[in-house]
Image (tube, rainbow, N blue to C red; front, side, top):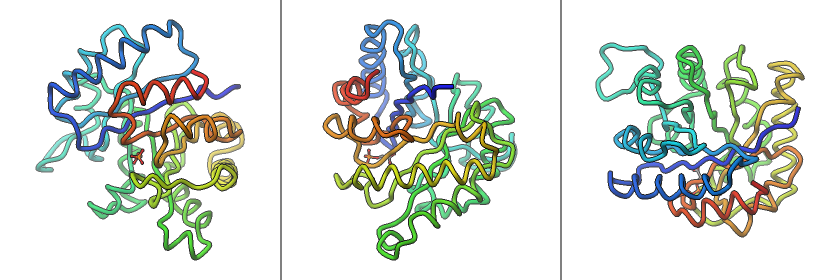
Length: 253
Ligand code: PGA
């Protein structure tokens, strides 16, 4: 089965209400022009504007996702958001284990795994992020680190239907630096092998593995034409309609 390319925007902590609605409306209009797009589109705005962005996307084939969730359904967790609250708002996806959350909020593989289990139970699809730091890369540990993150962060009963992996080298995020295409393909192929061991070949072959880290219109084609790259998780360039859509078009959407 062919894996449907996923073009996902991670808006991070950007966008007040008016900006987010404008951006969502712009993306919705462009995606509508594509008619039946061959790719799947996803935007992940901050929690505060999820509901308004959902309205702005009405009628367009663009899924809504959040950037994190708690593992509990409800309860005494001040400041947190549960998976059910996200489905309430019309989210179908949640990004988990982004390196910024692993760094800023000390999220471990175990915690990401617990969150993913809860998200799946609530009916959300997860985009589980992995990736090495520059130090780990320089020490030749990229594949070992990514394998550990997959083994620890991805729930044992994950399937291609509820889980997407995003490989994002930490040093490539927001820096304009990227690995070479052959480096990316090597990691993605290794990730698929680890997924096959963990979840079985069938799931691994169907599961989408996105590349993320300084994806731009000018490099999208190079990365997205690689055999094991099934889409992109886009930060900075997802905040401009033209760039986000140019990445999609250059990826064959
Ligand atoms: P970037 O971010 O595209 O701005 O590098 C990607 C991400 O962190 O998901």
